[in-house]
Image: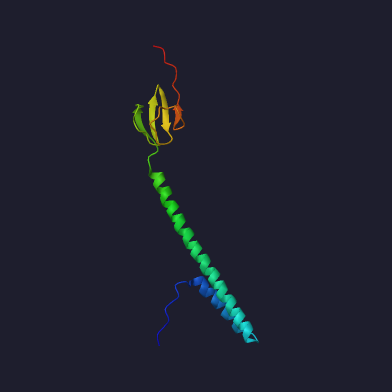
Length: 133
């Protein structure tokens, strides 16, 4: 006699539900076969709900794992890169820092614009007064 292949949709929670229903039916046998069938159909419905919830949980676990990987990558990136004095025509990426007219500027996004000209730059350190000699 060959054994049936396990149902891939079944899981431990599904088996627990079927086991509980079987135990209840064994202790309280229904007088009418229709009641037993109704209880059995209810158990199958519960198993399907549990299996669907398990699939949704697996999907959420995969999504969280992906987000954790992205967070780890972001945490390992260098925060800023000093590029020296700003030069017209040079390309600057988000995170680049330059000096321009004595002030320090941070690039918020990719840009070729002059610091202070648009929102692609943020002033980090404002130029101070020249000191006395």
